[in-house]
Image 1 (cartoon, rainbow, N blue to C red):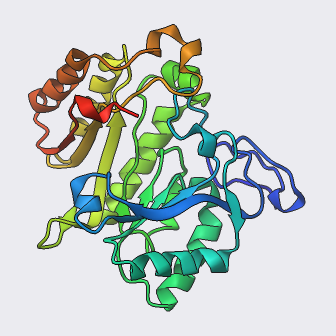
Image 2 (image 1 turned 90 degrees about the horizontal axis):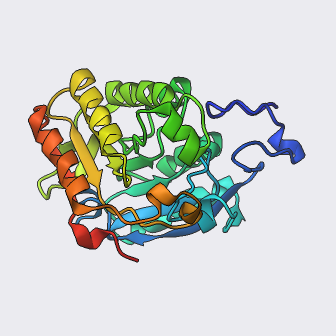
Image 3 (image 1 turned 60 degrees about the vertical axis):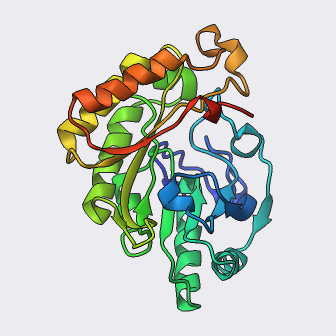
Amino acid sequence: MKCRICPHECKVNRKQGEKGFCKAGENVVIANASIHRWEEPCISGNNGSGTVFFTGCNLRCVFCQNYTISQEGYGKPITVEKLAKTFIKLQGKGVHNINLVTPTIYAPQIIEALNMAKEEGLNIPVIWNSNAYESVEMVKNLSELVDVFLPDLKYFDDNIAKRYSKVKNYFSIASKAILQMYSQVGNPIFNKKGIIQRGLIIRHLVLPGQKEDSKKILSWISENLPKDIYISIMSQYIPYYRASEYPEINRKLYQREYEDVVEHFFKIGLENGFIQDESAASD
């Protein structure tokens, strides 16, 4: 079976041990499954988010903060059945949701596990926390299973995407995926405690020296989605992993750079979202 799960369409046979761009094999590999308390307030709430970190990635971000997981293969193989039980176990700890981090490359197995878990009583929101580099068709396959989409729209300029994440046509692919996500779940719906139950929140990490690219992303969102869409503008960039090989991003984000992007958010009429203070950019 040739792998076409993500836009790379590597066409490798993962069941026979072949590995493509993401380096994933036949089995799901996870690095961690635990209660995460540092997502956006509407996700973590008081009880935390039941977060599962999947090993591997279909991007190769040179500044990845989780590079041991995404690029170096840290994690342990897990069966689909065990993954389903992991979701149920997290729910039993009282978390607000199941938060699937970098799930795209294991989409078929996750779909199977979610179906199993729902049959066993999984009834809290499921969050698809991805880099948005995924096909429209794959997003459609999640329509009955995923309640909240949390994509990170990383780049507008494809030259920047190639330089820092080693992928082609990032914006064209990611923007189409995000529009499909919105068509499936719409704007966020919150419960009485302010915890998201359904909807789309778009994340964007502002990079050093790239505030104009960030502004273009916000402008695209403003022009193609409702003004009251929720956006999380992140300032937490730290030059991890291979960032030292790229002098222009081998530093923390200047506060003024971030403030310029936030000002643009309001200038173009966007209404809802989250921002971070300087302390977010720390180990």
